[in-house]
View 1: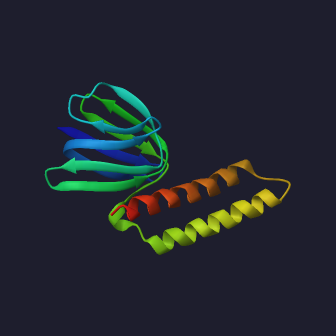
View 2: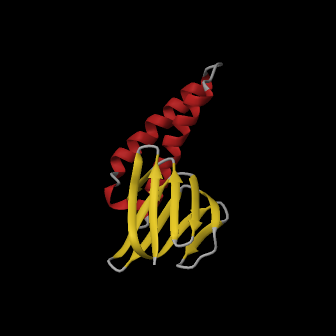
Length: 137
């Protein structure tokens, strides 16, 4: 069995032991991980993570980051993550609209703070990932 965790800058978002399989959205496509997987590091793309245990499947939306498999331990370091059950679509749509409006306003100005622009783009990107993942259920 696998142990699995997702860590964001805010801390540990999800942890599970006795995991049968994990599916990660990577830059090379979906990656399925089973016990005994070879060591691996992969770039995580915004999308859905599926964690299968005896109790069922937990689905989480993640933003970009990195995944690592060592022995039977799978770790994801992501900019953001949330359980699909906790996604509030109206709040996500509002956050996306505000971020996109701020991005458009920032691009209209001649001086753009690249750090602030990246933060706004991250909010919009994660909002889109949440909407896509929530829409699948």
